[in-house]
Image (cartoon, rainbow, N blue to C red; front, side, top):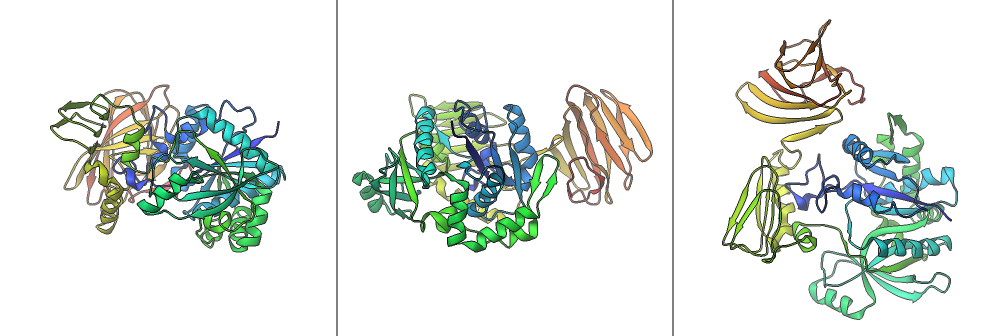
Amino acid sequence: MTSIHPVILSGGSGTRLWPLSRAALPKQLLPLASTRSMLQETVVRLREMPEITPPLMVCNVEHRFMIAEQMRQIDVRPRAIVLEPEGRNTAPAIAVAALMLVRDDPAALMLVLPADHLIGDVAAFHAAIRIAAEAAQRGYLTTFGIVANAAETGYGYIRKGAALADAAGAHRVAAFVEKPDVATAEQYVSSGDCYWNSGMFLFRAQDFLDELKALRPDILGASRAALDAAQPDLDFVRLDPVAFAACPSESVDYAVMEHTGRAAVVPANMAWNDIGAWSALWAVAEKDTQGNAVRGDVMLENARGSLVRAESRMVALLGVSDLVVVETADVVLVAARGQVQDVKKLVDRMKAEKRCEHLVHKQVFRPWGWYEGIDEGERFQVKRIMVKPGEKLSLQMHHHRAEHWIVVSGTARVTRGDAVELLSENQSTYIPLGTSHRLENPGKIDLHMIEVQSGTYLGEDDIVRFEDVYRRD
């Protein structure tokens, strides 16, 4: 049985699913359609295929610890987690993965999957993978075309050509076509020859590199340079930032698939959805008799056709229809369900106004645990802090603030200057401004604390790190 090496691309930001999806915690890391994150579901749905090897993951450097933790939660040890210093679209990410795979196996088959897609019919997905693998072994660069059940204008389309004589179930690609208007999309769907472009691929890594060399040698050269100069970093592979920044930012469709003469498509009807907006999540969610999809503490009265998600408090709807209501600890979004594609406009405005609500939630995850803002005012800030067993914060110092720590539960080991002490429930300590300090959890249960900061400046960038087990800057 020929092995298939999955390459999971996890670089997107998912701005249309704001306020739940944010730069520091994008949609692929969120449990949107189940109790597992979209990334976890992407990996788990491959488990029943014995030919699938551990995944090679390509992700944003800022998400590395969350991705590693999510893989640990589902008992998966990735082949590698490759860190992009900045996003350069899909062609460079796939090129780096292909270069890594051919080092170990010149004939390696790579299955390229975005981390944020929903697939309802997993058996049909597996069947499509095996058809695509047969085509890939015969030298085709294979993509998956989703059988279109609606005239969607938000997707690109693939027009199939003649059936492949040497790979049953696959066709040559006649054309890739851009996102159409409604009338054109209706023509595509009625023709029966056009499929949604899923952004999933299966090909031999070397075949992809050969085509990239012929079509975009600049992308291949920069990707190779970034990988050749990459540095190991704990369990990660950190691409060289200078070389990778020099790589053209290009999608794999534009760089290779639209120009190669070896493109093939496998039609697949597998209940696929890229969850590109809140309306897409409403479409696939379970609904009540009034067409409402709810999650969290929600109360409805005479409400219809709405998606309601409550993260931290009760949300009540009365006498309304066709809404999207998403509540988080710091933001509430209320939108007409038919206009949620424009959520990105709100995010763009926040960026322009230099706000932070599109970047982070009130609860911010760190490799050692998390912290959450509780209250703030002039010259003070209060946070909840959770440190996982065996983890520790960096040895650090602040120029502009002092801190008071109070243990709520668990045990804390506190380094303060040259002194080290153990604190238990209801005990506290004070860290004067300018004093080096470190917080550790030496126990077997989570450490929960309250931190009170006071000073002239309380920003997160007022941290001087002397030592950090996570090797952060």
